[in-house]
Each structure stands twice: as structure tokens, then as C-alpha cells.
Image (tube, rainbow, N blue to C red; front, side, top):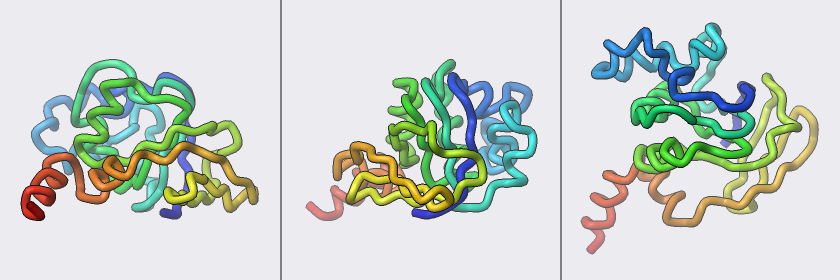
Length: 162
């Protein structure tokens, strides 16, 4: 995976990810995805290219347990979220829908940096700075859930194989 970093700070809540003023769109996730991260950066969706990354500090996804927060990140085209830590419910919801999360030190990544993730080696390569950031790769079954498109598709796939 390769793309551009979009950097945010600590404690990015689900309210910042999925702005409350668009609550009426919760049944239209494609439309809601057009407003992802709008309260944290009003220009985010305009700057986003499919395959890019959200990069943040501590406690990404804190706040309410809105399952549509990770869904609209994924629908918008973000390939993974990199953060120092994730709120537990956001982490679980992300696994369920197949959004890849990478827990790593994000201090040496800036907005606009071109980065690449090597899941096998557990390395984030910051191409712009010519640096590498290690991380513990998700276990193979979690990677397979993500590659399958989420937990439901993973279970369907496994059931077909049996």
C-alpha cells in the first residue's frame, strides 16, 4: 500500500470523523463519506486520493461507538489509519468492517508525506523522508479479515471453504 499521509493530532473523536450535523445521512453512507473528517479538516475530502492514509496521534476514534465512523473512512478511499493508539470500540468496529489500522509511532510523518506500508515486514516506509518506522503487524487472521472486506465477508469466505 502506498499513498499520501493526512496528519491529525491526538483524541480524534468519532464526532470529528463523522460530524454530528450530518447525522441524518447515517443511512446513506456514500453521502456521509463525502463529509468524513470535515470537523477536523474541512478540506480533507478534497485533498484525499483513494489509497491515501490517515495518520494521527493517541486515542484515534475516541468518543461514541458509531460504527459508521470507520465505515465512511473506508468508503472515502482511505487504505489504512496509522496512529499511536486507537480507542477500543473504534478498533473493534474497524476490524469488523475491514478497515486496516496500524499502531505505530507517527511523530516522523507529516501531512503530504508519501508513505508505504509493508505488512509482511511490519514497516512503514516514509518515502518523503527516507525513513522506516517499525510496527507489529496485525495477526494473519486480522489481515485476512481486512482483505476480505470485513468480518461478515471473512466468515462467508471461510464457510465456503469448509
